[in-house]
Length: 286
Image (tube, rainbow, N blue to C red):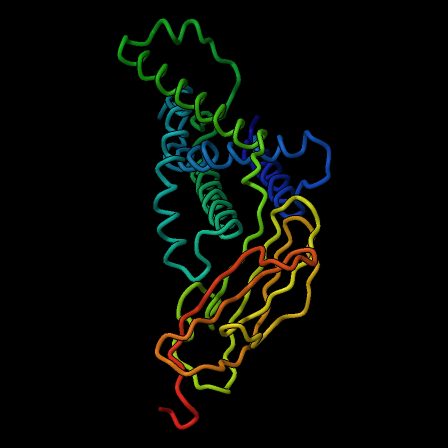
């Protein structure tokens, strides 16, 4: 293939589409396709594009060296990306990860193409499938063979483990995510002080990972008193809903507990619960 980056772009677009639209209720091959593409675009493609940008000449590296370096660089770039995302407001979530990986792959692909075009055509690296494994293996030293075997076993083990995790769902994987966010949309800077009789607001999030549609309702309680609620919401599988919940504390104290109860499908017992501690002052600030 004269330009492998077209294939990388095409398969990347398919992966992003599968992530965006989900695979719930679609034929079984699609979840497996998303798994395989996801593994490739995490464990191989980033490193491949990076080494292609660093070594554009055909004689810089041989095929097996490029293969091993692609896996190694892909693993090496994951920690810096994770640290960068953790420092940004979006955090380490699905779409920030997808966007970060896509950006890295795109930048490295552009640099690799530009560097190749600056070289004479006969010096450019062009990936081919004409690999003589027998001759190549015979030319390796004992230490090199051992390293390649260890690498192959590690990749095989990682692939088998990831496949088993995906295709063997466990009961504990079906759950509803229930969380509270502060005023900046993050899990921090929650309200700490309030005045009795005056409203306080937080953002309540619900994510349906049950695998089936569900109806939810949230109530905020100060002791046994219902002090705030949100309207019932219907969520399809993998759907997320975040909305503002306002409540009015009815007790005064340094450690007033506000309980947030999530009810599912008309149940009378809380399905999930969270709580928030407040220092509540009287109407005159005492």
